[in-house]
Image (cartoon, rainbow, N blue to C red; front, side):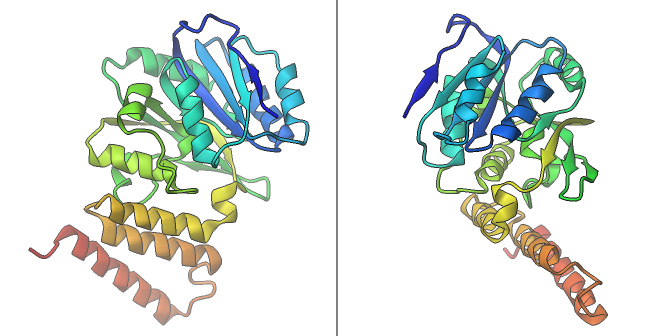
Length: 281
């Protein structure tokens, strides 16, 4: 079944921002995202929902949403990044934000975002801090650091605003990656010297438990493949960081690793860092 709801505004209407939300059988997560958007002050934005033919009542919820610039479609796709690319194609905003079902825009965050968008003279990829909600109802605050993208995913996707022009020039998400294409896109942007700007205020709350968290090994390996496929100058140190973080996520340091093993890991890390900074001629 394919259902399409066209824009309520004229198709030629331009927005400051288009928010793309991908969802599949996550009615309650989508409701949470909607409530976070509904509570924001006025901002000229378009909300696009790409549903993967949900069967849990998500489509019925979408049809009931009261949102003035909602555009949605429900059809089969080739994965989460294919759905995101579809959302970008339907967008009419100058900037894009990819906010998955379940994630939230923080209260009053749009007021600051609006100031940032109108005060920036030239196009930049804006990265913001993120509140990460863990399984024990704990919230941790993470700052973005786009300067580290050549090594690892140092920003949160749900708190990154990218100009649609840049997204188009980068040809969108690479469907060769099913879990790390967001990192691949931002890495390619960094390596091509697209301008980034980091802000300390938080934009979104990211809820752990998504596909990348559930399939952590594949996600880390895809990030490593992207480093090498794009010939990042920090691919050696980035490979070590990804492997180290994967091991530490399974066996937290110091608690499970003997002191000698932990020190050896740190020594190997330093060697990787030196190799990446001073490659052989």
